Image 1 (tube, helix red, strand yellow):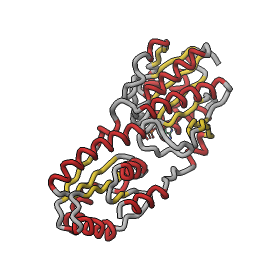
Image 2 (tube, protein in one colour):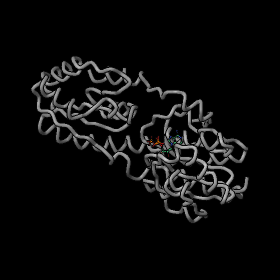
Image 3 (cartoon, rainbow, N blue to C red):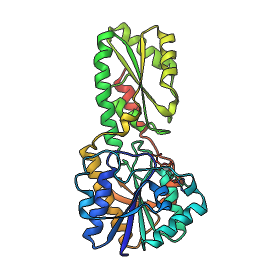
Image 4 (cartoon, helix red, strand yellow):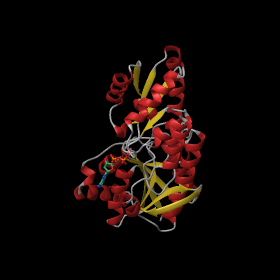
Amino acid sequence: MKKIAVLTSGGDAPGMNAAIRAVVRKSIYHGLEIYGIENGFQGLMNGNIRKMEIGSVGDIIQRGGTILFSARSEEFKTPEGQQRGIEQLKKHEIEGLIVIGGDGSFRGAQKLTESGFPCIGIPGTIDNDIPGTDFTIGFDTALNTIIEAIDKIRDTATSHERTYVIEVMGRDAGDLALWAGLADGAESILIPEKKDDFKAVISKLKRGHERGKKHSIIILAEGVGSGFAYGKRIQDATNLETRVTVLGHIQRGGSPTASDRVLASRLGAKAVDLLLAGNGGRVVGIQQNQLVDHDILEILDQKHAINLDMYKLSNELSI
Ligand code: ATP
């Protein structure tokens, strides 16, 4: 293998740049030519392909977002779209592709691999919803952004004796809500993986109020439903002043944490090693601090499992 390429796809995540840097530098280290494809699979079909040099990835390890930009493309889901992508790769004599993104992006990578074009997936999403890895690139940064925001909300919640419902991202996964709730000592955490007990949430709030608690924080994962609707239910049931904050896209931005930069560097390098060893159709990950790789199809068949012991612990600590 002499020439490979890298793209970022789906929702962006802090640390994607650190992964691109690792892919580019590791490739050059091994004497490969490395190409960057802009705007994900859309850019691949359109031929937005440029050669990357050592300097192309200088000064990006600390930057959020992705210098290769990201996109979603319906056309690439069709066999014709995939064929257009393959033609572009052939035109540039590219023999392997690294796809940084979420499970949707891995489906694209799997389709290319099936057509005889080896791809490796790197899990990059703040949601931490990819099976086969304990952490995805961007999760730790998003989590720290949430914690910082909740600490600030807690200050004002205390001054005004309010209940706050904070809606966080995560799509169908509750990891961001669970980790943030545990890290911030939330009264209740609502995640899609566990049906909430509304009565228990209310009685906990009332108990806290009766013993003079100045504020209460409830963290709700977006996969559960609307924070505003839940906030209204809480206020109606308790008569306690309840405010709702939807944190939104600030969770996707910002400089990646040290942890995300290190993870991205390790996974990026591992992906290059796999292509060099002649592998395709694999997704890299980290499990118990060891780098691992799994068959893409296996990953796509599984469902991400949340750590329910942590959920239980959060309830035990917020009595
Ligand atoms: P995130 O978790 O942040 O949303 P994602 O990678 O899951 O990231 P998607 O929008 O689901 O985001 O997928 C990104 C892109 O991958 C799609 O826009 C499409 O181009 C490609 N893709 C998704 N599913 C398929 C498929 N079944 N076949 C081919 N390509 C696909």
